[in-house]
Length: 180
Image (cartoon, rainbow, N blue to C red; front, side, top):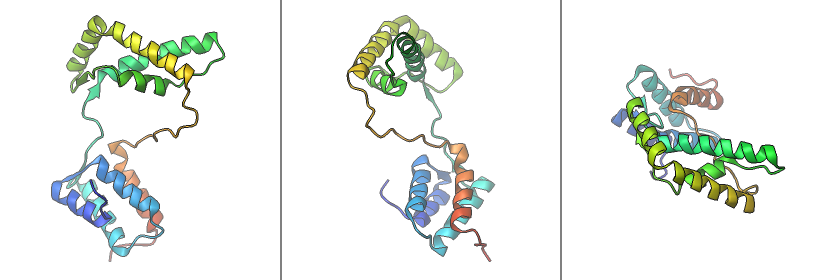
């Protein structure tokens, strides 16, 4: 999505009936970087808030599916890191280790609990050795080259927080603004 104004984003959301995570992030970015919002921007945010409250616009959750591989890799990485940290002075970054391994393993997506259980079983039977091998490689790499000086990816908000965020934005940027 190219850079858009708040008004264009709200217009698009009203037209589509959906506020995507990308649209939500762009509105947040604009508000964070603006010293002051215009009356039109306040009104657009107010309109978006109303549309979200009435259900005219639905906030699309970030995930409507899960990657079972993430859960399997994290479980393995946490266990191995805890083992190493308990027996040495070394400190490891579980996130770095998991990301390294996940980039080298096949994704196992599921949209239902049954699907997730199937993927877990499949992974335990056919991919456990490969998962352990990738975690070992990731740990060795992390011990050789820790990422202490890099900027971590910030935690993103969930779709359920859109209303609260828009409300907070409105209160912060327009504490006395009320549509007449």
